Amino acid sequence: MDFKTISRWFLILGVCFLIVGIIFWLLGRLSTREIPGTLKIQMGNATFVFPILLSIILSVVLTLVLNLIGRFLSH
Image 1 (cartoon, helix red, strand yellow):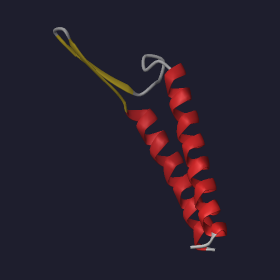
Image 2 (spheres, one colour):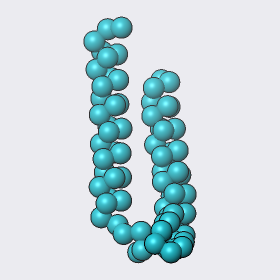
Image 3 (tube, one colour):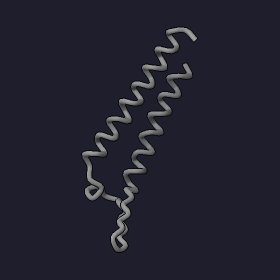
Image 4 (cartoon, one colour):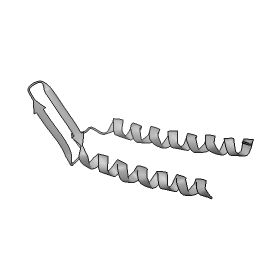
């Protein structure tokens, strides 16, 4: 592999880390109680919180991002 290919991989990896970092930063600012579509189950002292709508949205966004990266790499 030459330096051009390696540098392209590092740029793509850096952009992916940036996107994941922004997503985690935004998730840290949101409270799961504020998001509609959140499943919350309480049994005694245990609480289970699962944001269903947020999971669907993240799945769609990550699918789009990974498809764009895949198309960029295939050219």
